[in-house]
Length: 301
Ligand code: FES
Ligand code: ZN
Ligand code: ZN
Figure 1 (tube, rainbow, N blue to C red):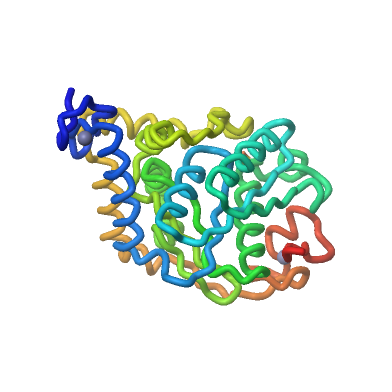
Figure 2 (cartoon, rainbow, N blue to C red):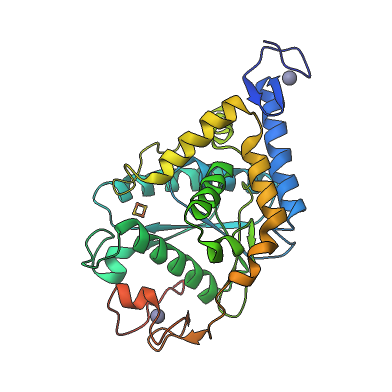
């Protein structure tokens, strides 16, 4: 196969729009789409202080690389969850990625901060669920305490399609109403954005190897067998038979999202009496999960 634009040998054949591209033209195409997503959804503004949430995986590695290439003055952030072996290996990748792009990196270690790792807390909630709460809380509080304007995450098209699909399956309409490439900031909630919202996972992996980014392919031990992985496989099957179905599903959802707006439970937002961050009840779920008596201090020293 030859590249559609220059007739060099193809590096990849995209499924939608269907076209073979050489390495150089694929890199150009990939970056243009990220730029278009940022512009289309108005994700980042000039002179915002940007914090990129890193994981050691390909999505955040590629995202930070591309944002740096676009000359955004990014800062990177990694939460070491204290998961035996896995978290330290991921941290090593994050360090190398940040050195490669010459971006400052802040690391928060859960074990040092909270006295235990994720997976070691005795509560009835599944590990992945309270891990998600922990990551969202810490990235938001870190950004808020250190005056960042926006938290950028590496969620990609496959993540979004499977998230929307699972919430449709269970009719979690209040989650659907709040889902999208941009969650605006409000009070102590810092704005969150997803510049890879329209980029398929397979192309992120192809971009990473095209530009020489190393990342961990390891899956978190608690995520093994997670149903979201099955949803992703399911979408990949569908995509093979109906190229473009993922992006149509996600864009179609954004057009219809207003239909779910009435579903958002607008309870009073209180301040957690331990940490002062927004909370539905007296004590926020983060302080409850970790049994805190005092707020965690995340200011950069
Ligand atoms: Fe949170 Fe696996 S990364 S439980
Ligand atoms: Zn070409
Ligand atoms: Zn709290």
